[in-house]
Image (tube, rainbow, N blue to C red; front, side):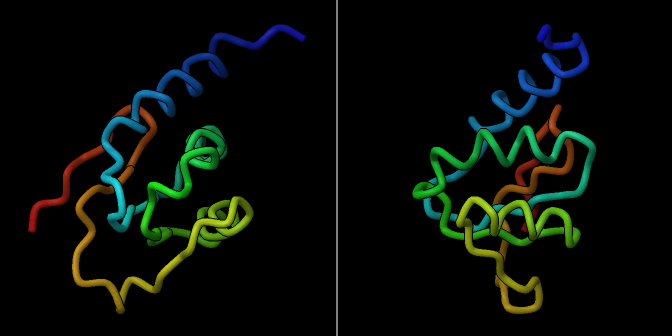
Length: 94
């Protein structure tokens, strides 16, 4: 099966976003159409991630599926990096 250009772009964006993940830090995970590609890329390196805060039930379920701990936003002091879209990761302003 040939991967579509759109799927290839999603994979490339997800791979590129990984460089912004901070070891041991809480990761904010948004809700977007390429969520599964990003989570799939996170899964093999899940030990680097302290835990995550999810923007949606779908994000939370996907993270939990790959054994990444999901925290309630109300219990988190800061989120150093938030993945808002697969094409960019924005260091959170504190």
